[in-house]
Length: 71
Image 1: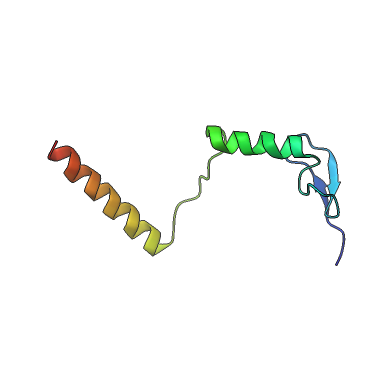
Image 2: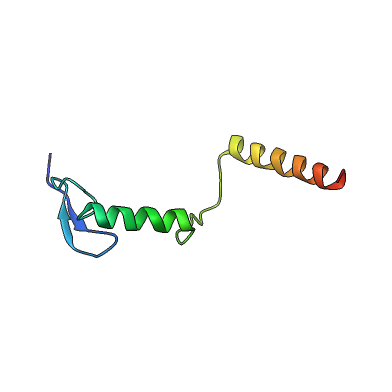
């Protein structure tokens, strides 16, 4: 298998797929990235195209609206 080389998403240090913390250069950078996801700094902005997921979201939104109306 070829050795993949890319940059750590946190600090931009070059890392290879054989590094223990790949795709990060260290556990510290991995935790910083996780913290950004947990705090909402990162967001997935692509629309949801899965019909089952969309149906579940619409059902949940409808339930919330009924709950608010019933107060």
